[in-house]
Structures are given as C-alpha cells and as structure tokens.
Length: 245
Image (cartoon, rainbow, N blue to C red; front, side, top):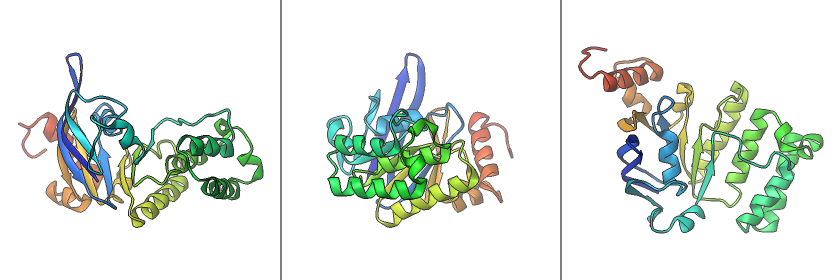
C-alpha cells in the first residue's frame, strides 16, 4: 500500500531525509521511530504529498505522489503531531467541515457527530474544540482524518502529551482500523507503543538504519527492551567504530 523509493529531501546543504526505501503492506501498523530531528516528520510530509522530495518517489496504493498528489490525498488520512483542527469550532462543526471538504455522505457525518456527542457529552461536544482535554482533541483529530474512510492513514506523534489511559484508547482505535484492513504508518516517541506495531523502522540523522519486527530488533541488539535496542541502534549509527556499545 505504501512504497517508499529512494526518498530524499535537502534544505540547502542540510539533508533531512537521506535515500530511504521501504514498503508497507495492507493492514499493517508500521512504526517510525527516531529522535527529534531524525527526519520522521519530513518523510511523512513527503509521503502525504505535502512536501516535494529532492529525489525519489512514493507510491500510495500504486499511485505516484509526485505525479498525482491530489489523487493520492483522497486515498489517505493525515494527522499531524500538532492539533490541526479549527479550535474556534465545536467538535461537531469540525466534523461537518471536514465532511464537506471530502464530500462525505451526510448519513456518515451525522453518525460520527452522534458518536462524538456520546463520547464527549453534550456540553463538551458543543464547546470550542480548543477547550477540550488533549486526549479528546487527539481522538477528534483521528475522527476527522478517518471521516472519508481512507485505506491508508499517517499519524505523526498522535499521542504526544496524552495521558496513559488516553494513549491506550487511541491505540485500540488504531488496531480496530488495522483489523478492518486499513494501513497505518505512525511515528512515536513511546517505546511501549512501538511494541504494538507489526514492524518498526528506526531513523537516525535522516537515514533508515534498521527495519524489522519489534521482537527481531530486540534480538538483534541482544536487549530485553525495545528502548535499549533503539538506543544501541542509534549509538552504533553515530559511532560505528564503538565496538560492543
């Protein structure tokens, strides 16, 4: 469903993403790991057609992002790490707005409004979205990203700042989406969340330095935890001469 082919992005003399390639299968929850500045967000923005690559291309469901970005955007949902809905609109008004943008059938819009009203309660569902607790904001953001029922969803740090219960509920939604055949690419700083992914890619200094299942990554670095394995992978990448790190 996602095929990243030699993707690079340079800003002047700085290379933010350096010749990365990988594929993501239908129904897969694919994790993108890396420290701040590793190139994760830049890569996702290119995959979504929001930023032009310096080299390479991305195929979304077989369609070139470079050649047909608008056609690709109809097949994907994107949720940025920063709350990107309209804060002065209510949750229901946000749903109505994004439903109109994507020409979503009125029946589905009404159903999502009812669901959000049930989750938030009448008072919260009619208040400005910017006043919602962060966990509810993120759930609303996911609702709007999925409103047009895209087969592929990109989630950039979706649970950053969300409490543990909210994070668990959010990941239940992600797994429901995957179980229904949806493809999810998600970036996260939380190693416990990365354990939920079918496969993970580790980014360092703009490059893809490892890609495998969480268990295989831990085994490769002889680590009991994914956090330690991640640290070892990044340290080895930055200092390859350091034996046994």
